[in-house]
Image (cartoon, rainbow, N blue to C red; front, top):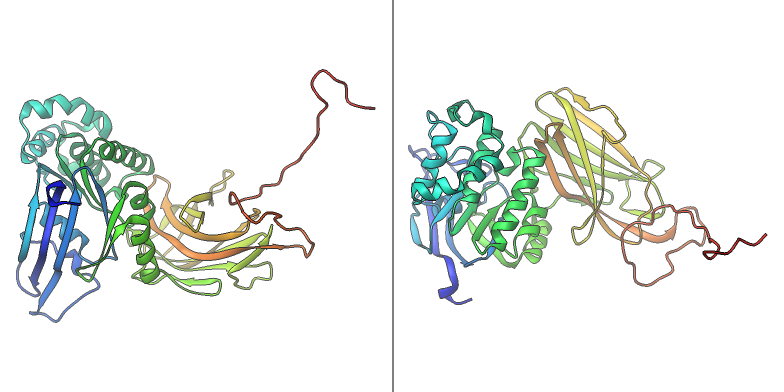
Length: 418
């Protein structure tokens, strides 16, 4: 695209930190890439980014890759060491919980404060105030100082302000995972509206399905540099191929660099697909039940755990979701340590390639750990029972073949034959 169409233009951007020296910046991006004390650390180097007006662009990459540092440079929270940033229009940010809020001020006062920081007039904020409060759902706590808010309440109000005020550019980091499941759905719906409304959005998330849903184009940031940019599907596929779980046969080892949404309280370490003989396999037959064995390392006690296990096609389309609480089954109660949890699934998958997403959540909706595409496997066009039963068509439409019963009824107005 031509430069006149750019809302964001980043050229040769670099951000250097002096490790071991005092700094005012938050350096969480260093995790996983430590350097000896006193050495220079480049969180970003030679980064070029273009985002067109009205475009929704994603940033993907492992923890510590530099995604959040890039957003902080774009939002002017931290200055770049080198390079140039050009922004066209007012910028709204939702980076870290409570960013831009004064802890001693009430929710009401912080709405107006945030609007002022964004360069808006008081009457502009007042025109949207009721809509912001209604979306946030914190009406009862509007006059309470925000220092008494939970992290979830912070996020509700912060997102409502950022999404509803008339900024031209919206920068969103991985903070939506703090909200409950219902509020996350509201947020993604609102971001859909924002995108359709012509605003420019830069979105960082480890929920790759959300990136694919919202973003037409993405950048893969790795080691502080742009590894790839282009259509989101292509970028995500390349990233997953590089950083995905290590799989041998039907067993996937989920390493620390695997893309995930996590609080650190629970960590998925291993996923295995098991056949009826209990042995790992990466192939199942037509109509064959199978078992998914998941190993979690639990760092903090969990007394209301909900396991989410999702089946998706190779293109990322979710076709089935099961949870341990389905059918009014009890919640999981897990003490610190390693636990293996198994789920037997009796569903008839049509021939094709499939992936398994695995996550553990709390009942309130807080995601403790979630990994997309944790394991891949193939559904064969070969009958499970040894018969000649096969899917008879060369083109397979759909993903599942649920059990059904078929009857032929007499034409309307006619009695069935005796």
